[in-house]
Image 1 (cartoon, rainbow, N blue to C red):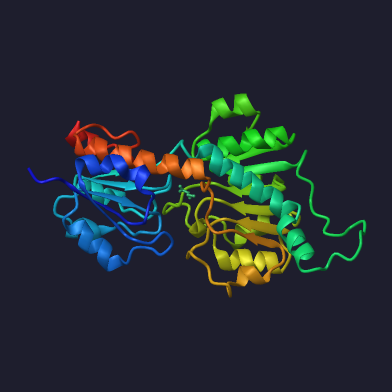
Image 2: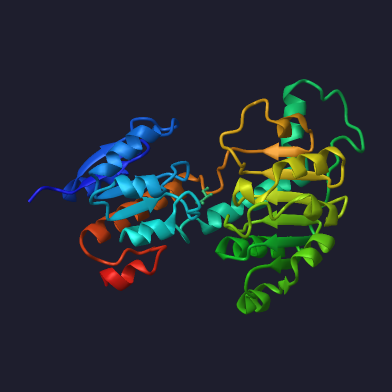
Amino acid sequence: MTKPKIFISRKLREDLILPLYDIAHVEMWDHEEKPCPRDLLLKQAEDCDALLTMLSDQIDREVFTRQKRLKVVANLAVGYDNIQVEEATEHNIAICNTPEVLTETTADLTFGLLMATARRIVEAAEFVKEGKWTGWSPFLLAGADIHHKTIGIVGMGSIGEAVARRAKGFSMEVLYHNRSRKEEAEKELGATYCSFDELLAHSDFVVCLTPLTEETKHLFNQEAFRKMKKSAIFINAARGAVVDEEALYEALEKKEIQAAGLDVFTKEPIESTHPFLSLPNVVCIPHIGSASIETREEMVRLCVDNIIRVLSHKEPKTLVNKKWLQTNA
Ligand code: DGY
């Protein structure tokens, strides 16, 4: 019997993917930072049984039409807006993601970004590096307080709840908006459910953690920024396209809101000429929400595990398209 074939679209550490070699022939794109070219991905998809993909790969109809024996796509991210999941289900292909293992790490980064933005930490570090620190002065690089303020979390999934727990440690009032109410979180964290507009009007920090879907695309538009306080700080650690970036730029430039901390962008990576980078009140970081060594290792292990399970006719641990189970139980 011929061994199954697996393609990994980014260079990963060999020790993490070792278990795959026992069951399959493995091929891997040879660069850590450069994405796998589309042509190669399509070519590989043609005769692969499994793909281990990155959030920067578009796994769409073209991939599913070209494949001949693809059984599973394991995406190294909790978000899967880069994958046309319904198409996959139609082709009887399991889609897996990496939830839970990255929750606390992503919450750490989100709260860290909030703190860096509010207290102007990046600007302050640059200030010292550039030799501009010539003396102490009372309001030098003074930022906004975090403790005892109101945080509004849009998208109260596991990461939202983990951010809320951190906010509680800073004696913050927690508001949240979500498709459904989270009564457990309300009890455990004292979080208050409110409408999107109420959240925008009352929050000092508006934190976007909602997945990108047709419904949430450009949820944060001109209207939304205008409903925020002038002193509001906007944080996005979800997906860039949940925000209308032109509207955000305008709101920041016109000081309709105070500042923004952004881990994600509509088109990644951003160029050094991106308009956000010309604004002093914006902290931009390169989509590193879940990027701790421990967590990234866990994410790879989970992808590997999911692939092995599907190729051994077992249910994967973190299946996105539950309908797949109906035909593969
Ligand atoms: C995810 O897993 O979706 C995150 O954006 C990665 O940092």
